[in-house]
Image 1 (tube, rainbow, N blue to C red):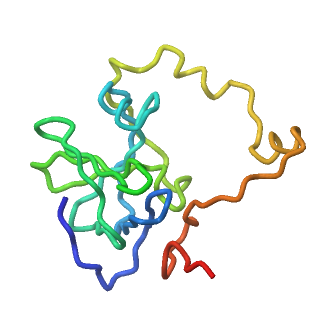
Image 2: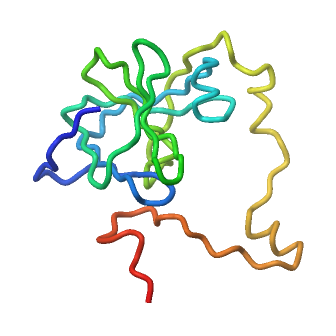
Length: 167
């Protein structure tokens, strides 16, 4: 993965890993968001599908830390955080684009997937997932009489230093 100098333009999107060791910025809003159901993506993210948005490399930069990279095939490399293991990116090395994992955006609800790839591996019950019974995390903990655990997760915005200095 290539590094790009931080630009003087304001980023349109920011994001990063769960622990905050790796952060990035995207400088365009014209993302190409999609879900990939192929078996390789399922295993790479540990889920039924991977959610990505493709962006030109020239409109992207790592702003804190650098991801680890694993070549999952002859043509593809995947970026992840060395510290917490968060899957961050997908890239065909011969192309001048990078796909960022939508769940790593600071505001993932701003980017709605517009296409499905890897349809041959869609799990048979995919269409039923939205109709499953739902609850909130806070509500689940309240039912047990427990309080929510204190999160060590990086906040969904840029920070000057992470992790914060411990006193």
